[in-house]
Structure formats: C-alpha cells, structure tokens
Image (cartoon, rainbow, N blue to C red; front, side, top):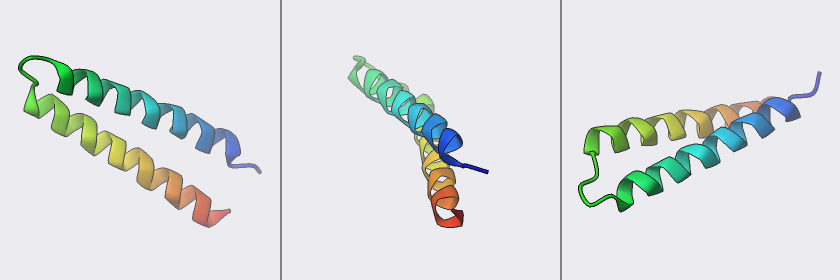
Length: 56
C-alpha cells in the first residue's frame, strides 16, 4: 500500500497552515493563542509526515 497519497495530503495541510500562520502574523494585532494553535497543528502534521516517510 502506498503512503504517498497520505503524505501528499499532509503536505497540502502543512502549506495551508503555514499560509494561515502568515496571514495571522500580518494582522495589526495577531492573536497569539490562534498562532500557537496553528503552529502546534503544523508541527503535528510535520511529525506525521516524517513518521510516514520513515515507515516506508
């Protein structure tokens, strides 16, 4: 079974989170709680990608 579709999906999610973080950071008064949650989610996605890459 190929893990590549799942990895590709995670890459898109990671890029989306990165864009949302950048958008929030550019606001005049960024919400630090929102930024923290987005960064944690981005890290989880990255860790999942790495885990899948090492399993294959």
